[in-house]
Figure 1 (tube, rainbow, N blue to C red):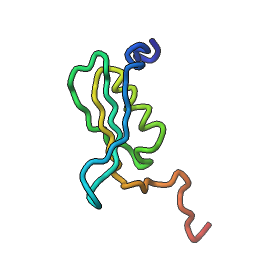
Figure 2 (spheres, helix red, strand yellow):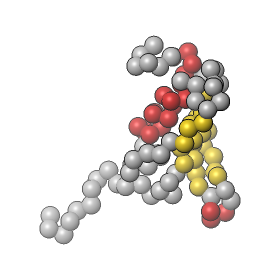
Figure 3 (cartoon, rainbow, N blue to C red):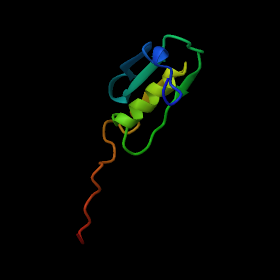
Figure 4 (tube, one colour):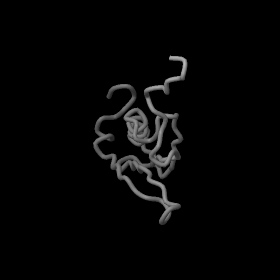
Length: 92
């Protein structure tokens, strides 16, 4: 067990990418579910400007699921998160 995460419980976390809604109104999302020690509680994970494809976002959702929660991570930026390279100003 490292950083409060039970390795055995983490082996039983499922992650799936899904689509919520239909047509142009649909959004992508990740759903992480704990298969072991699932307490039935769901968490809607809202993240920072780097989006839901960022590895830190997915890693955090996975760690939360390891502790028995179901975690839904919607793509709030519709596939267009903030760039990790800041935009250049016209003065640079």
